[in-house]
Image (tube, rainbow, N blue to C red):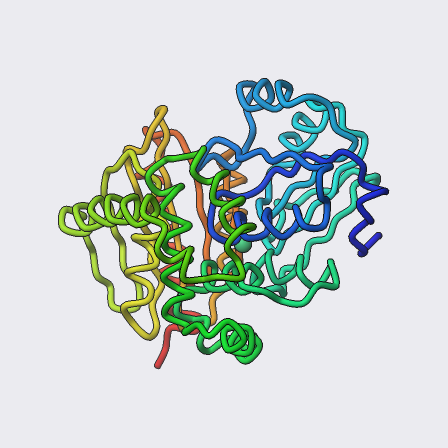
Length: 344
Ligand SMILES: [Mn+2]
């Protein structure tokens, strides 16, 4: 299988479909350097890890492309096929560090998926043979959160920060500011952030003082505070169950808050009423040696959309079935913690 990023000439006109979070935004900004003028961006509907016919229509309106590149988001094969055919792309390139849903990829796809990478932005920087810049490490900070400081890549992150005269707290703050765009549901803002990073990656201060990001961040935080206040929490020691309702895309933020507030914990969060009749379930482990990939498999075998990494998994499922699945997931987590890394 090919493991090289094709040259811009080989890729031709490219549509880059990227994740909405800081890593996806940073990665999209990096790939624009590589592709130059031969690229267009597409941010999928926020929070949905598949593409419906409405998304395909939106993509069709962008015109035709030689290549569809999918960046930092592990969409099901059928969704990617739907997207590629909507824009007439004969070539598909996946650049990612998420675990892909099981199942074979079409032989013609170029799959640059490396689950060992801390972020898509870091992975992409290496594939491009570029010198790491602010964007390369922004994705890492966004995806790893405070676990960044104990990750093997941290030394290299510090080197880049040094060269920018920037501290790690500022990097984390910037990741939060970029994430604020998706957290308030501003899809256009996500897209704009890609270009803002392209202009400002040499000048972190200018990015940290972006007024609109600061305002969005404040309003996203206010909703998280409300959810944290009103959430129903069941504490089992090394497993915490959190249930709430919000139309906003904040379940990973809420899950991370709980996960990172303790040394060793597995969190199971459910947003029992999200939107369009869907609920969300999210799990994250912190400080425990527990692989959540089988939780994603469990969700998929029930017919739900699920994805993530070893340490975090997100599931989208119909509202009426959500609580039952969440309890099942909770039971699985509790016994996995008992058997595995849960003992002190
Ligand atoms: Mn990522």
